[in-house]
Image (cartoon, rainbow, N blue to C red; front, side, top):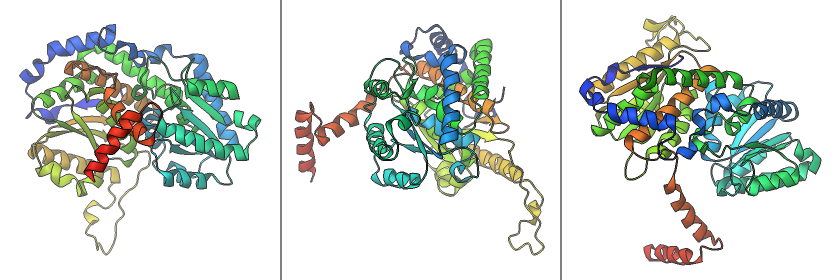
Length: 447
């Protein structure tokens, strides 16, 4: 396995008897996830997707990616939440946070429809001027507000530049298999479509066409990603509740029960930043309901040690850290020797920067432990496709187990509709007139 779980740094906070008290709940959660008897069981397609995915569609994803690479300088990915976070996480993790600025033979990739920012839309359109563009719109319904606005605007931009036949070679729709506004529109216009599976919620969909098409456009080997996830699945089925994924789920619940309400996902690589964003949605939407759930937050060290380090060290003792640590590097850089030694760094001259980073990790881990912060450590060697696939499945599997231990439905998100209803009412959407009156009155009274 590419990932290794290290629980040495929670021993002063969670005793063996504390963990043993979760044995029955862990066994029940594991059984529920595997036999499909748990809450939300109509959304566990991701569990076995790695072995029963649509091979024909997988081949079409590769062909579409090659077409985009050949005819486009820019790919615009339009989607929000699980429709973009996984793909962006993969691109930054496996390529670079500076992917769009690097010399390469693949298109730049920009993500739109993940906010309602006029400036962002305008600036990306400016970046597209004079360049050939393709679009991948990702939305199960086609009516989600943020991506729908972005697609309407981008479609207008592209219709001014390309003929209808040319648009058929440049617009790719990832949506429901049979129904919905976007599916009907794509069929009418003759755009190629890919499927958002009915039994796979958005935050669990990165290893479907939702994530794989944008990832493949960047020249990333999606076969190896799937292999990494397949290896993880096989390991978790073989080891059962003794697998690292189950241990992680049990430990975080034991820490939660002891009063640790916040989990910080930490990395020492800037390329991991969007992995933490993907993880926050995965755990926040899956566990944060019924007045329960660990609050998922994230930091990238050592950068955030200069902003959040003080609070982590000395603030309220309601948090724990899960550190995802990369031990190796794709590129080795050494600290050079300097004759004048003005910065006093000659004591680490000729040392690889990776070694400096590792010592920073160890020093921080010990300091935070001493300050009352438990640390779960997940280690891997380098950023490659198999590691990414395994990591995605690790966190997904552990998330399902953890939520079942907590006794919540991991696969729904009823709370996200509240803001949408208010927004629609304030915008004057038909059918929301009474709520609109009520909200405007409340706003006027506040003023």
